[in-house]
Image (cartoon, rainbow, N blue to C red; front, side, top):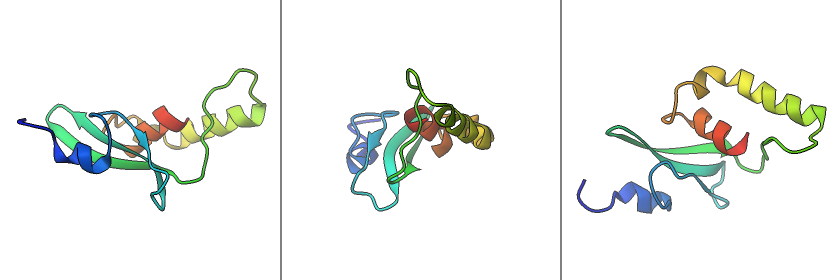
Length: 94
């Protein structure tokens, strides 16, 4: 691919598979330009204003259950890999 992919500049990310917060987007909290082999896709993911539950030292049981419920609920979509929004939401927010 000669030159820089315009999708990277349009999404405002530094490279492929590098997620970035989008605080000004009305509905989605993050964007990533995902690349798997020759396939390239701009993916917006995560609900704006909702914090995930990344693992923390001394977290509460409710916090842990919230994370596990998300992972169980979206397991099939997370398993689809880099080209799915669920994969990126799991990786970045949960």
